[in-house]
Image 1: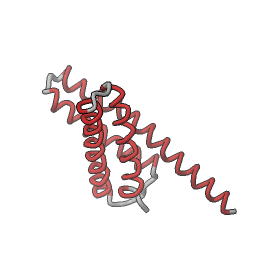
Image 2: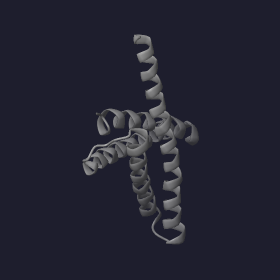
Image 3: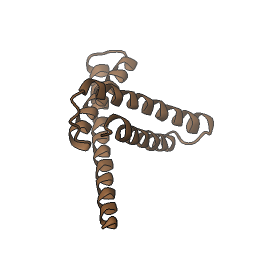
Image 4: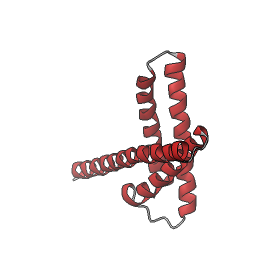
Length: 136
């Protein structure tokens, strides 16, 4: 019986992680899309466009993760969103720091550095949200 419970918990955990990954992948398109529209069509500053792309993507990712990945029913949506956004900002810092260390200091290939950075920030974001934002 205990083994069946462990298997079910493992499947539930893996499914959440996969859903989180799908949502994150969709966020890449939102981020790039918003950034592109703001920079190329609206002719806004590239850094402002990039920041807005990040904010919109983090917001859509929050909503999708709340509804689909973690199925949250927490009525305090504002507090939950602030927690999620804070985790995302730390994730952005981890991503940037990893690229800086691996590419800037250790002289790894930029894109190989980026692969490790995305992996590190994804793990941070998933576990941060699992254990903090959407903890029940």
